[in-house]
Length: 269
Length: 300
Image (cartoon, rainbow over all chains, first blue to last red; front, side, top):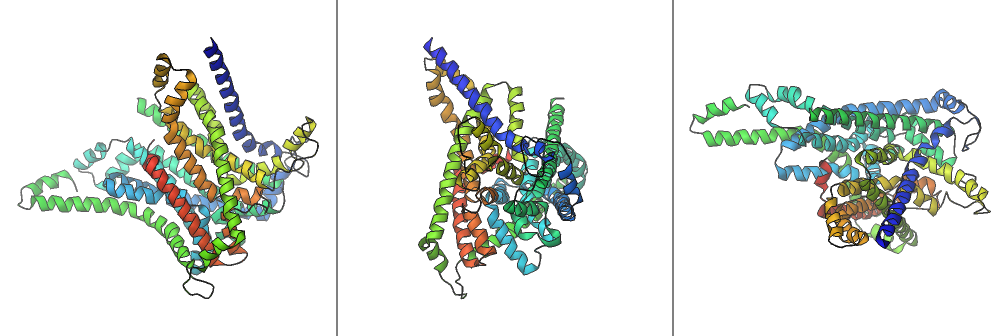
């Protein structure tokens, strides 16, 4: 009897702590959304009046618009480069000897685990010699290196669920390697490639530390401008920008989960 | 090359050597496909860091010396930076364990469908920009922010607490950013634990608490360890959140490196700090690889 009571108390305690932690995670993430619609000229929560003035301030500011354009172009280009490069790399490593694969895997995930500040300072000094600081090319190259591990990891895990004999069968029936890869393998790991592409896009769009050093002038990214602005004051315009960024992240997340569900349904068939 | 050609090769006397050459060509093709991405990472990530590391062995006059490292150990400012960096990283890691472990355990107790829905509460913050979340905390923790005003209206405090622009703010913000990094590997490990073993322990006379500590907890340790190492590495080199929520009063290693370059242009000193940070990170990564296996990241 005593044990049952103890178990109930333990269960209750666990539920309360767990739910509190979930709220701790989600509430601060979403709180900027209602704040961005505030009509007051300073940040308040809960907002007392409703308006789009901070969105108007964002969309009519030439500085914010130019930064948004830079960030979007950089993110699209990063995705366009990192997705095919990363997918090919994953395919190559998947088929390589385990010894080579193990070394390459550790090498390839380094950009995720090495402190970004070191990559940022290193790239900044390298770019100073090459004249790439404050250029779109420079931002895209650095972001591509940062996004590649995400593409490689997702595509490699997709390939692990794929029966490789299908490609061998196609090739034994006379298809060239490239043709078999493109028509047999790629369609079956399409979802992993799409997921990798979204991750690459978000990685580039939300990246702060490298952009802070490497981007600037006409090619300042939105995160660089936000960071510098937040160092001085709490501008409510940033609530509107943040809401847009949250919207992009959540859309990407929804897309990824839809792909995964489609894939799972397909596997069940 | 396809099998029909291989069969044709079998008719010749050089069968073995042809197959060997074929095999080598196959391997080179795969390696070649991987190369562009691997090279991009080597050139953008590794090359600059190695070059930067080499700078740390030269003094201001351009001569080889260990001056930059000597200064790290002698200067009270740098010592303070290391102490603060470790204090914050340890505090953040411990709080993440205390918050993350119960949540993951709860997720294993509920139905799969409920757990999947609750995981959204972890994944949405995880994929939301660090900058956006830090901004939210700046607003929440400010002097007249919602936390201070609700504590005051509840009569718990009379004066607003100083929550942002100091150590407290940095730690709160960092825990929020780091928590998903602890939860994701830990939950992945816990989900694979066979709960029948716990039930068996209880059936054989163990108390539920005893079964938890002696059966479930030890089996969750690899995931917990992976999470701890991940949170600790990322905290050691974390820049954005302490830079904004610390309000200049909290100087962690990453900020010290940045200000040493952008304000003082002292590349030698900054790169010596960078080398120390890199070595700390590499030791952590090595530890993680030993205990958890980095290749597990590549599995579903």
